[in-house]
Amino acid sequence: MKPAQGLTGPRVAFRVLSVNGIVNGNGNSPRSLFVTRIAWLFIVLSALGSVMTTLQGVLVFTGFFGAVPATMRSVSPGLQLVLLGALCWSIGMLLTSLALLRRRPWAHRAFSGLISLCVVVLAGTLVLGLLHPNPLPSDAGGNYLLLLRIIEAVSLVFPLLVCAGLVWIWIRMQRRNVRAEFSG
Image 1 (cartoon, rainbow, N blue to C red):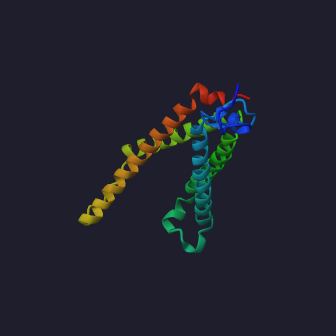
Image 2 (image 1 turned 90 degrees about the vertical axis):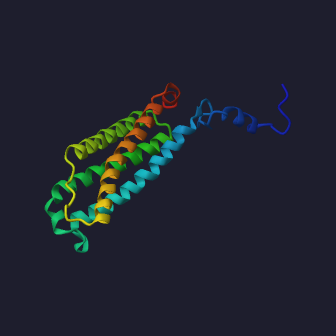
Image 3 (image 1 turned 60 degrees about the vertical axis):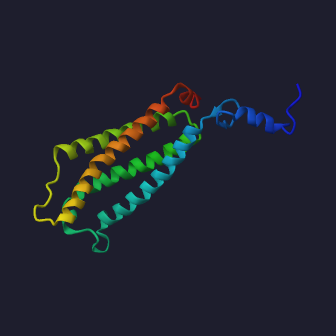
């Protein structure tokens, strides 16, 4: 069998194997581009989340330069636990996303679990926001009251959209061909 003109040697094999995605390290099965993109997306987001929660933790734990108002210092123990949990989740997601990129067998289950945890937390946030809305100040001016209503609407819509996106990713990650990429 004669190769196509201009396509000889390893390039032919690479193009044949990489029709459906990036070639796996052992060259046997292609890697889906979806998993690679999701892994990179979560690497970037979780790295940013780790940096942000670390900086917020420094502010809350130390009262850095008086930047934390007295009202926040009084709820500091609960806030410290929330920030510590967010930092642990961000670092865990970063490590899991790196393993997902490398197609480690445990990474698929860990990634699915962390996404499920995030969906549960965001859904809880949404339910709490609906059941216990913060009262808007009655003495606020027209434009300020409008701004507060917009912020209130965004704070309810944002978790809903993020949950929908995470559920879509979770469903796509459960497909048979994606799961096959992680079989050891």
